Amino acid sequence: EDKVVQSPLSLVVHEGDTVTLNCSYEVTNFRSLLWYKQEKKAPTFLFMLTSSGIEKKSGRLSSILDKKELSSILNITATQTGDSAIYLCASSGSARQLTFGSGTQLTVLP
Amino acid sequence: NAGVTQTPKFQVLKTGQSMTLQCAQDMNHEYMSWYRQDPGMGLRLIHYSVGAGITDQGEVPNGYNVSRSTTEDFPLRLLSAAPSQTSVYFCASKGLSFTTNEKLFFGSGTQLSVL
Image (spheres, rainbow over the protein chains, first blue to last red):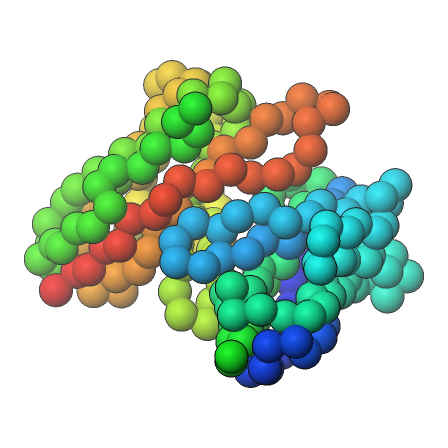
């Protein structure tokens, strides 16, 4: 059974701080790892990492895939209150299903 | 560009009632799925489909039924609602071609309460 574990479950920081969110996965025939941001309703896509694309960056957000450790991190630098959200990690394997972790609730205080 | 459209946005049911959550996508995606989201548990897969006429169970299928008569539509039926089905439900779709990535497109969600 595929499994994705995220840590920490919740995190409270102040504006300007840098945060690192963690995701580990156990997936049969790994294909990809995805990060989503969920504010009020539907998750919105951030990054997809694969064996051929292990590092992605967009503005203050970046993500790295560690194929050896079966894990990924999502970094957010110079956090803003608008970064407050649940961050979801998901992994895809041979079954093509996305298995999601329980998410990290990030709260950025002004 | 509509993407994935879910209705209704909110629903309150009494125990034992049945209802259908509607989902439609206009991206010609082969793959469609239903997830439920409960506090602290992330998104759990209920049912999915890889094309018209093909459906399969996910992690938590009990109490739910699906069908896929067209590429565009993938309704989720609650046969006899129970309080344990109180949750937020998301429909999501993606393409399945070799060159298509694994990115799921989500609908806006349905907040369901079963009393």
